[in-house]
Image (cartoon, rainbow, N blue to C red; front, side, top):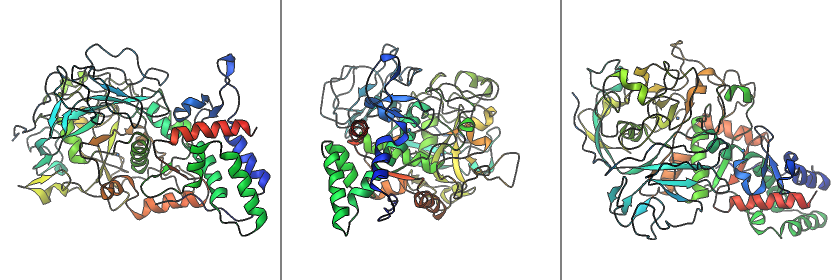
Length: 528
């Protein structure tokens, strides 16, 4: 766990404290054009004002598969978010996604003909009358739409049936690499996979936690410090009395983050023009983040929504990409057909494209080939498959659990790649430029010491993003630690270094966080 920076006993003057809380980030200008007099929060990206109610959206020989097919048709492609980052209103007729906007909400009356029930989001007691579903002992898994609490930003999750598949590629597959074999059988339990890659709209909601978490951290330092003098205790109580009308903010300010709910917010981009060189449209995939940042995003999102999200493992990713196929691509072996399914070098116009605009695979998942390459959990080990040759293993046993920061596995290929790099079995290793066999440092141009544990600065990483998954069976505490937290000394040192120098910040990811931020903005307005 990485706690917030420690409060130095008497090196801050009381006036300085109030100044930090009242004018943090210059966040109290009224919304322009007379549209609203709500307090606003300046973002760390563009300094654009965001209404208090929307504060959160402001900062890695073919065998037939035994996997059951998802029943009925797949969910039709649609836009994940509108151009302004809000929920799209042009969802096609027949879409079966069940929407939710509250982290504690249970499924309301479904739109697909299933009866209402008290099951968690994405599960139905009865088989839907239409649309895809996956039968499990817990109920029928169905597609659903989730709204990131505190924002109008949405994402969609698609049910993936459990089954077995041959992982890797056959010797006869065109452009096959040695690290794609030998093939072995993997048993995969059912799960939900994100319909599309994480967009800038989604990732910006996480990035924009930085400024409010900084302000709450300042409050926490002063409200939890054990003063030894009467004057200090008196001033501490004065501050507590000023915050007391805002109970959720007070709770977040007096409660120390725990291993279970602590998340780190990424620092503002050192060079935004680099990360946004190919665009930062809300419908474009987010890029240049480290695997650690992607993992912390899933922890933050899990805390807000009450569902457990994480990165897919390499086996889970390939299983979902294949969608029951045994060919080089989800649509067959002919790379000439890839135009319908992927953005790649020949059709991308030299930039990443909006998510979900190409055909999905058989299970309704978009962009598993191309657009941006995607982080998965595993360490890259060239001969990892050899230990499983001739065996059948579970997806969890197939994981190469990371022990070093580099190299890690990346999957799917990108808009800048040729079709062979977008194959279902293609493995890409992090921190290696294909033109440089010795590899290169993806943080080489980062002048900070220590360098950022959240962002990369080299050209290839502008093609790198991620997508999330949600297991049917919620993760244990041990699982959460393995999937969310720093997993090697280099990452731990990088995060701790940022915390010690005061640039990193730790927040509490729980369903009350959006309300705490709204109250923070109200408190800051009162302190002007």
